[in-house]
Image (cartoon, rainbow, N blue to C red; front, side, top):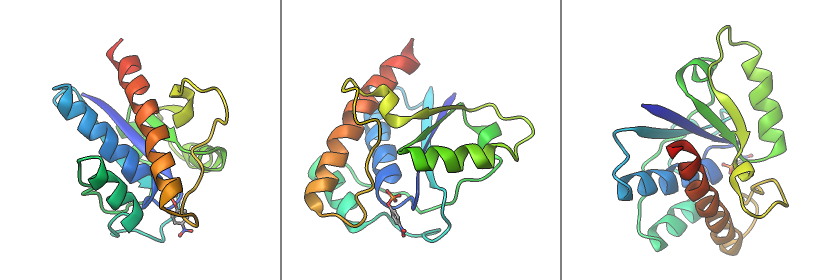
Amino acid sequence: MIKVLFVCLGNICRSPLAEGIFKDLLEKNNLSDQISCDSAGTLNYHVGSVPDHRSRKVALNHGFELRHKGRQLQIADFEDFDYILGMDNSNMSNIKLLEKNCKNPKAKLFLMRDFDVESSPKEVADPYSKTEKEFEECYQILKRCSKNLLEFLKK
Ligand code: 4NP
């Protein structure tokens, strides 16, 4: 089983949406028995919370539900997961800081937009203080990157 973890700041907007998109893609490709995914945040503010209503609405608009409950990124995640994907550069800095506390890190670290066909910008912008329009844009970016990530993992 290949294990993928999507990471943002709060784990209520971007990364649970990425998880939902990627899970939906895995199910449609009959790959759920070979690849699994989860999401986490570098903050602990939203531990146990359902995703932001705007992320849930975007997901429903595109035909799937978000079932994730917020959790914070843990040191053990670096040993447990094969790939950890951060949404922006600030997430990556926080991920790398925590990685230093892990004795045997296994996970390969990437920016989500390393898998984008559009070369810039390289970040999935934080939509938390924005409107539904930015959540839809966030979905489109994550969907594009998820498809390319899946092709990468299949190789
Ligand atoms: P996310 O968005 O990192 O995409 O889940 C945010 C959600 C909450 C906060 C920041 C970003 N917050 O500061 O509470």
